[in-house]
Amino acid sequence: MSREHVIEIYQNILDGKVKRFPNNFFVGEEGKIYMKYMTRYLLEERLLIQINEIPIKVKASVLWSHRLRSPALIYGWNYYDVIDNAYPGCFKPWEFQQVPHKYWSGQEGRNRAIKAVKHVIENELNLSLEEIPSHMNYHFFKNHDLNGAFKIFDHSPFQVIEAVYPGLFKPWQFANVPLNCWKDDEFIQATMEDLIFQQLRFSSYEEALLKVRKQHFFDYQLTGLFQMAFGSRLHKVLEWIQLRIKEKNHFLPVSK
Image 1 (spheres, rainbow, N blue to C red):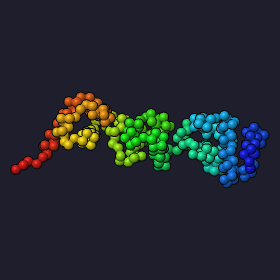
Image 2 (image 1 turned 45 degrees about the horizontal axis):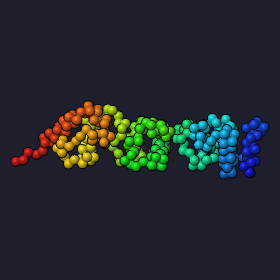
Image 3 (image 1 turned 45 degrees about the vertical axis):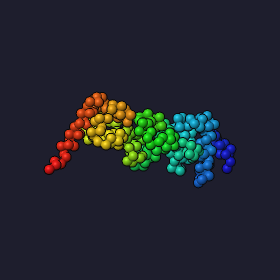
Image 4 (image 1 turned 180 degrees about the vertical axis):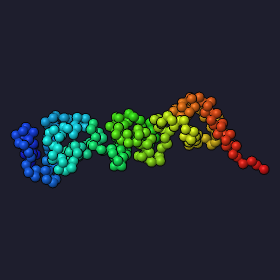
């Protein structure tokens, strides 16, 4: 059946001239093609929605109120599936104002969240690994319609990225580290050791005592550590390092 004939049938149904679609109208792959014709006609010609505006303006209610729910149920489709059938590969589910029901639920939802975040990082923003921590914040998830994905990981940027790129990053590399982390002695110790020995490449605490500067905390995005753990005072950092030196010397074996 030609597109023109399909659209004519659909127009008659929308205008109330005909009550139902013909029998077996939506059978098999041909029926999916008819759904494509109808969906595109509805959105582009009848409702005059620009293609790039579809994620913003189209919800399930738009399709269902124009008689597309029954044929969608034949295929077990939700409203996004109907749109994807009409515009294959043009949109991602999370781009829509209304994400399909339970899209982010359970393990499958978690896997979708991981895939979605990775897609945005690598395909839309083309970020290098070094750039990722500085981009991971509330605005990243809001601007890319990933609030549902963010919620799965308790709104923790690090937890999200740890799931996407396991083992590649440390919590303190991210700006949005929970404040109580900087009250945890073990967390402070691990962060300082990473800064001193991995980032700054100092050979010992003794070298760090001589060379560490306030600017290092800003350069390596550790202002939270500097402010919360050390009260923004370099002399407190130096006191902490001196204490580590004393502890190390205390445990050194006594020469005979």
